[in-house]
Image (cartoon, rainbow, N blue to C red):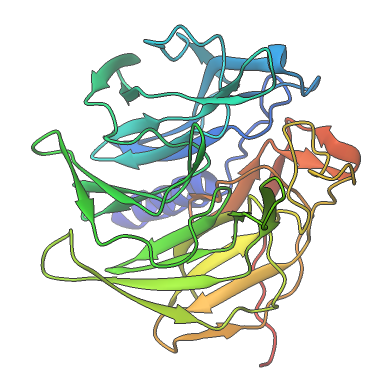
Length: 352
């Protein structure tokens, strides 16, 4: 009887690990993704973003949630907005302590300018209810959200209404208070990517603002990677710049910290070497092309590992880890095509 029970358990485990995640109900880009497991159930959420038309009226506040092992996606109540924004993209999402957290994002005004959302929310995947949490001290969009010790959330750099900020804003879920950690030492950027393993985080690339003499400001890709080590206090971060893997920056990559072949790594996929507007067209009118490159940074070795390419995608921003596999969900494919597809990224290390 024991052997039969063990065999049945093995079959269930194998089946769970191979459960497919369905494509999203609608194509969406620059959406916010996260997953969490509560009492044995794994929930995946896609919130906010922009639809296939890629215009300001295609921005939305929609939220879909999938429970692993169940059929399809459920549409949840829309993300609230104290500013009455009808939609937003570029928000930051993270799972922490069995809940989802949503921060910031941007909408487009009638004149084409960006407006950063100021409010933040906690979403309970079981009750499907939102709770407003304290506003960010400085509202940001196109930032990076990183969880730490199942208690803290860092919001790294990003855009705030009129320009980039170099802040590392720290939210304490126990006290519900915000504070400031050691600032990001590189050029302030938006559309950067990053991940965290243990007390080590890595942030790469994005777009900086340049101010040429007697000329209007312009946007420039920033090929730079910075490693942070969190100290005994979460507000204390020791920073050091690490060599860039290619010397060519990518915009809105998807990234996460994970374990690969027993080694703690931070993985970056997709993005584009051309910074672009919400329609996938570059700031100077050129078409942005999604990248197939995969970057893998070994935290223990303090060096980049060589990895095989994966499926090209951009504007996905979040690399989702479910049952040990890495995925993007939504984003843009070649030709600025907004997609609803799930893409599995098989990370394959090559000889160094």
